[in-house]
Image 1 (spheres, helix red, strand yellow):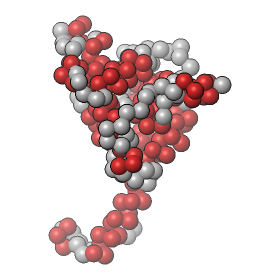
Image 2: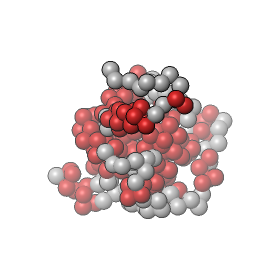
Image 3: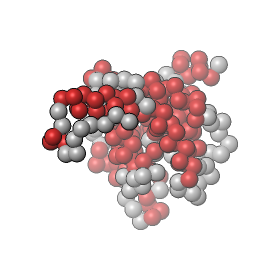
Length: 206
């Protein structure tokens, strides 16, 4: 396998770093497929629910897709809990960090904050603060995160829901992660796109 000449980075030259840059770009091109494959590991995380964490993620993405959401929203819904595998105490930040270079700022923010918003549904049963979301009140994406949790997250634990399979979403994930990282045309700071498109929803459910 091709390798650099140096053993300390400070001794590398232009040729070394040009070669590394090519390898890194080639590796990065496979990110989407690695993420989809990694989602399968959610089947082995956090037991106790009526569906696995993979089932939950697929159900959230299926609801987003059938509701007419755009590909940023659908991929955000699919990957929102991928951090449960490696970062159980800040899974929301972990997932947002993966998404942020490639999706609309709106979607990355919602994924990053969704754990605080989800507390509304359960924290009071554990002597916690169910109103943790209130610290974000007034933020432009507050209502988006509230709706994300209400319509796609907190209700996606239904074993009888007709959930789409993981491979159904692979092309969408590939399309999103094929974008140039941090391209302003993709991250679209300040833009808000509705979660639901009734016309597209009808088309997808036809």
